[in-house]
Length: 341
Image 1 (cartoon, helix red, strand yellow):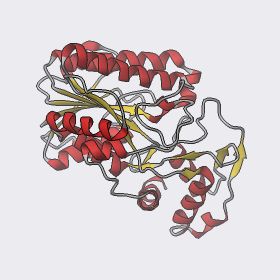
Image 2 (cartoon, rainbow, N blue to C red; image 1 turned 90 degrees about the horizontal axis):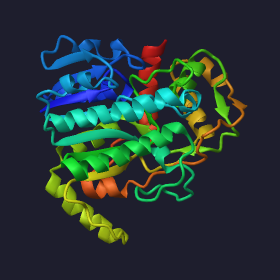
Image 3 (cartoon, rainbow, N blue to C red; image 1 turned 30 degrees about the vertical axis):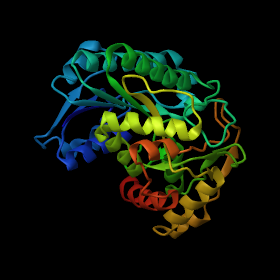
Image 4 (cartoon, rainbow, N blue to C red; image 1 turned 60 degrees about the horizontal axis):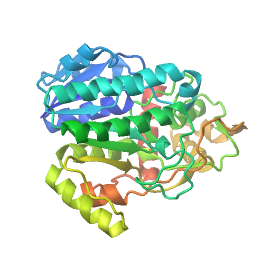
């Protein structure tokens, strides 16, 4: 297939580009390098099945050009981070909603049948339901969370009106290769790793008992490939079976528009995370074992606990995490140590 990946120079996007190229697909990468990095994709540029378009999803003409002759879109360009959205809500809304609709409409206009996009576990907001189940959400706790939920609404609306198939993947705390440890809005795992490798105490916001469903990047790649390749008729049939088994009184629409959790289905506290990272990194540098953690105030907008049910994606797409959190962290720490020194 010819696949367009927005945000293809970013963390998840660059891993997707690599996975699709290894599979033999043709890949078009669209990125404005506001948060992505050229170094993540530079080893693809001489591949005749890879093309790079430097452009902004907030410009519709750029999106329309990028999707030309593509078979499928994987949309991962966004401004992530809850704290960033609280500090800069206008930029977050402009990119995550305006840009999203630009890419979605461009895909529809180009006659693309399926649109796979990065949704977010932040959509669950203040829901107390554990584990998180796709059809039960709470009130959003940040502008970022609102934008990601609005994207789901637009995806469903475009499926109903225009017939484009949309699949949203609600990621739960993804980590791994190419994840940037730098900047004020870096994700917790590369940030902790960077601190430990510099013999500086990583900072845990709160007492460390907050927990997350950390998900290794290779599990995310599996989910994206399944979302690309599972036939529409199979998805509809499996959704009906899943809904019936869960007592969900909802019949799938004529056109596919579904969201799925992508996670491991295991809770890890921030204290446990810090201990595991310290232990893994100490195998490469024993001095790291002596570095303690420190604690700071809980961040505004943070969800206390996050744990995904992965029953739906398993039942419908056949997803089964190949990497546990422990195995993923071990492999990721080796990559971090080799590339962040």
